[in-house]
Length: 187
Length: 141
Image (cartoon, rainbow over all chains, first blue to last red; front, side, top):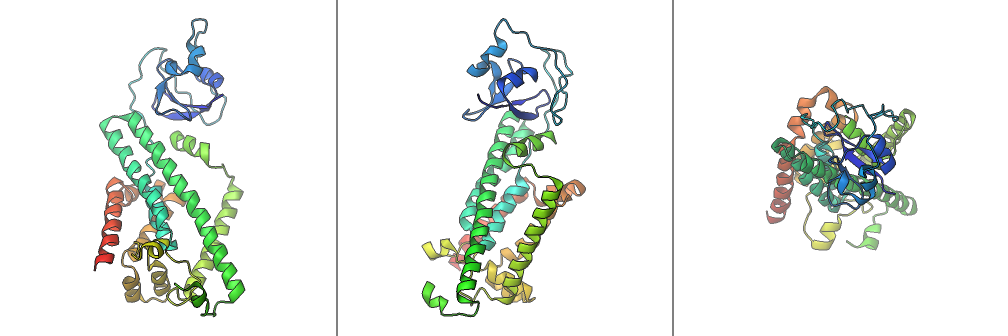
């Protein structure tokens, strides 16, 4: 059973929930949902696994107070009424992606910076789409920016750890003052 | 806010306050150790520092080549030598430190305007252009 994100009435991304939990969250037919493997956000009624939520026998419950501590009750509007609230801007990841591009240069990890650059390009789109009013594309760019930035970050951490391990190993084996190691490496 | 929380919720592991402090101390110890090594040993002479894979493969310098020599020179207050080693990464150091402050030490909350100027959309693209210009330029001239 897949776990889903959905976009609430205020445009905030929430998740993850199982289909049963989505029901309790008060997800409607036109609520945008996303789960792993989906190309983009889709209306909940278009997703096969969620079809049972909207089958004739089932009536959407009144919004309950959320059980989890971190989701806020947002469903203050009447059922079926379109919310006209501007969604909050998704996280841009600009700062993170810039850092993850620049820092690896100091550690001979220029190849990692390429991942960071992909992150920056997505991150720069988040605000552009948002200002244009394309909130869905904005959320999408935010997700991609976050994904690439995090991939770069984790590889960078592994890279730094590897560098330190190699450095310490060589230092222990040969000592710091052995210049003949140069001949061994021969670069 | 909740948006940020949700996204980090999925992938990263939620750490408690104690774990955060422990992680901070560990990173600080590693950072001090690395700085000490960069201070005492000259990456230009010592063979045990990591080499740039890009330089080894292509024979061209990457935008980061020379940054370790630059750190060594900076720690000895030799700014001229630092700029000669890597003119891009020297100004990048204070920029990165500001970024780390904004991201991990609550700077974003206290100075949202600074973040918007230094780490906004246009600064991001400027960083990209600078990196690529420096990359091409240093191999041409």
